Length: 212
Image (cartoon, rainbow, N blue to C red):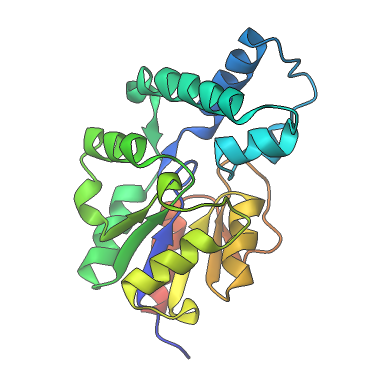
């Protein structure tokens, strides 16, 4: 059996419960820009960089329009920092991983400033060895670029890493390069491509502790 060296966390929906609030803000901002949001589904939104989703969903938007909407979203999210709650069991899992000398990383489409702001607000930034954020990579999940960058920095093979993801796009990205993937069922009933699924981080801690 290959020894696991690193655990890589997604951010939105895995570290903090942001996706629902972001989706609602997203629809408000779009509607303020004259866009009908009735056909946009939450399931197609989660796990993707906002700029990527906008270009994918609205190919007629100019680059300037995309940047304008993304900036409006960033402002809305920064005002709601106190509303973003840590996912159940996260701190306990992070403490366990540190005590077992795992390398711990974040791979997310969210911007670095926002990620660090939330981590600092919740006093958990010190747990993470590296963070690969949306402004550090060119593309969005389900492309695996962010995970490839993280593995290179961690000096870790894909088979030696566990990725914790809450979206189909994130799971697909990690599986493409051979990572072990734990699906966290924060917003969905199942993640079929994941190797295992868990309801919260305490279940992941229990599983890893039993396998240790």
